[in-house]
Image (tube, rainbow, N blue to C red; front, top):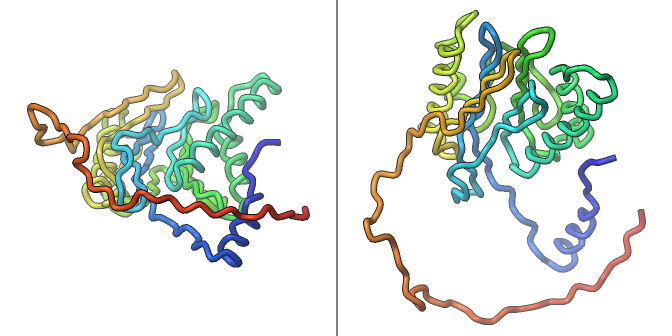
Amino acid sequence: MGGFGFELCNRNAFLAGEKGYPAPKTKKTGTTICGVVFKDGVVLGADTRATEGSIVCDKNCEKIHYIAPNIWCCGAGTSADTENSTGLISSQLKLHCLATGRQARVATALTMLKQMLFRYQGHVSAALVLGGVDLHGPHLHTVYPHGSTDTLPFVSMGSGSLAAMAVLEAGFKKDMTEEEAKVLVANAIKAGIFNDLGSGSNVDLCVITKEGHKMHRNHETPNPRGYRRPGGYSFPRGYTQVLRDQVDVEVVDAMEIEA
């Protein structure tokens, strides 16, 4: 059965304790994701900035992940955990659909996600906004890294969730049209982009209805680059100072670990 492995925990403890190697520090993650239920479906939204601590390592990443044709999921937290968690559940849900011969239900995907995350007690850093439409209508849920869930008509997650939630609470109303929901979600994501340093770049939207889904990649680009040097940038060889050219290599003895 697929899943996550933590076989290297003992090795890391050995390196940190006996060899004196400092353990890597956790880095603050940044994201703004949200979702809204409208009259005929669900609108999911996300920013496109990927950070590594204080470094922006990707300005246009995708945070809306495929689960099933009628179910999509926004991910916040560690990008590797969100990618692999949603991919794992997507494959398991596909096998479930083939076995039952029925369309995937949002509640089934929710149960699979929450059980998997609860099993790892929060060590899998995946905070998710799950949305979809099935025979029971539109559904919207949040899934926290420890496996707890919420079911609400509008939700937000990530470091920019407070700014996004302020916009959602002020602008949400029942039975919105698709265009109204798209505008509301886009404004909520932009609130996170402009008020949270961990969120930025562009706005991605995904509209899910009973007819299918429509992905709006880079639906809005509120942060266009203001200036580009006409001739580009060229750095001659030797432009960057070399501080050190010696590499230290230390051989660590192999250790036996009893299962």
